[in-house]
Length: 340
Image (cartoon, rainbow, N blue to C red):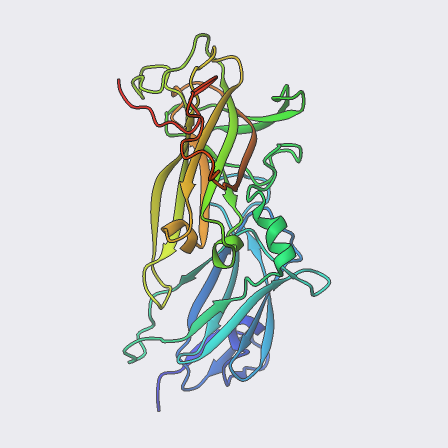
């Protein structure tokens, strides 16, 4: 006889295994079964009704509900989770469905596997492939701007903090709303949003253009090269892309890149300033990413940081002008500056 498993008696634990329910108890006995738990981490701000729809190679399907630690907290590291325990040496496909059983998407989805169980196996070789396929018309609208709630008109939905407290406030760039992160005590305390990851697997986008606006609560202009701990440093957008490092998808590595910098000339800190940047997408780690977090950081360590009108849209260079903004007529967009 091989290794056996005792599990909680519910669908996500027993559906793909031959298990026997123990009467009058809340567990099931699964003889000759070595189970390993796979979890999808997804966007915090999704519906309670969104479910994971999982199908094995024999066509057997189950639905799994999501769990969330706290619906109100907007910490960047808090996610919704879908977990299911799977036997070895099988292939599965997965997709997400709404309350009407229509396919949907939770902005991003990242697999996380428990450690290999000590069942005498060399490896637990089951795999799960997620279905991200969308129609051409859907893809065009999805990839037109992969920031959710970039105009800040839906409150603080889809925006998360590493520290401090975010607030939805009036007085945005064009008279609308903005989000402010208060209570920062470190220049690396940030406010960020997850980008829609469906575009990387189907679209023909080669570059993305990042735009946004910021302001801080101190008088005087910030500097791009001020001391990050003691000076009035200008904030920048950083892009963190999470990619699998192996075919088993049980290990993830985070890649970091500057996505946008403050545009020169810089106005007084209490006025709105622009951030701008272009990053290569196709053929890079960003295209392969299962999660992309775009966040603004590096403002003075105790400054309240306001942001508004953030977008990440396809950038198509003009064949007529090899150098964008070549006359630097009004600002430094498309130019990389350096110095002290």
